Length: 504
Ligand code: ADP
Image (cartoon, rainbow, N blue to C red):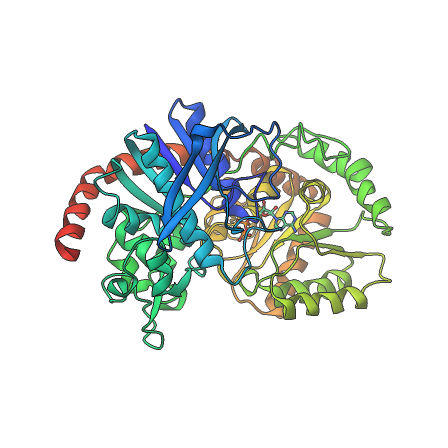
């Protein structure tokens, strides 16, 4: 198959969270199965290629933007065994920024990128079997392709993956005018008008991606079900109900996440050997952090969280967990930062509060190296999300022999099964799960986990062994995506026809 992935992130060169890892992991696996996969990304100025390649003159192209010609350069490179094409607007500073998201002009930036990505594909002149879009940033490719470029670019089907329904890309109709779509014409309930009746003049890009694509999926089966209920659907439940939303659980890239060959660890260990995890963590991996952060002994239960600090992630529970862990004789580490200044401020105060406590360290930056070191050193990872489309941290943690303590929602529900739940077959039990997002329930769950870890060592070792052996590679999910791509063929033609007749 010839598959084109269009995305805002690609790990490790442009990663803000799980999205970048998914695009990398899926693309690498499909490439290794001999499919032709091309990934199109914006050329952020912070990207450092392993081997930079100056764009050849023929890979420059121009396109209409806001009624005038705009020039773009294409940087082609092979990164992590994947074929990448990075688009750099020559005159506009849309991607000359120090981070991927978080700017007031995010919608115009990514609308520009959508148009440029399709114009680039048109310039290559080759038919594509699957155009795979990810989240709101690239959702506008679907209406653009249907309404502007249908006769110029041959695409078998358009697939959109929802990595997080909370972020929908809302903008005004003139933003669509800029890329050549007549914005006002899309302000209808059947097209891209935001479903919130309070904002009738708002364009919702993700809604457009869902409606104009042939197939829609989320990154876990439970999340696919949950978003069909209004309390989890962020206003798009009725739109999603019109589609058959599939849930395909993410994998993790096992080359990047491999405790046996992880260059960031003080000591490596085989991912099926829990005794080695415990030994190396005690002797080297915990010690490394202990020395670096001037901590007291980490021999007690060591709990951590590695996360963006946004309401979705259950931040009130993360804050509460620090005190609970200390009270119950453990140590706590947090790696994460917040794009929301009030939340970051709360965490800064927390850091001040714990500054002299040698059992706590709070690190507010994005650093892959420390994330790897923590996964290896921690005994428990805490993921108390209020909702979670998939969640990669618990999957990575399990491969590193770190026991997940999670709230039962979305992908967390599909990957972690409580140790004490008699209804679950023993061979599936691999962590601790709680439902009510309260401090009391969190405390009793942490106490259960500590007791198990300290007093039931043979059972704990057996569980670690099972957990570390789980196949969380991209092999199975990639098979499911390939089936999904193929199964949507007839639906694709049907929906293209419907779309034409409905919107003609
Ligand atoms: P989301 O995509 O919602 O942020 P996921 O659990 O799907 O959450 O993926 C998060 C990914 O980002 C994981 O690989 C995690 O290790 C990583 N991560 C989160 N915060 C940080 C950080 N501050 N430093 C390094 N890696 C981080």
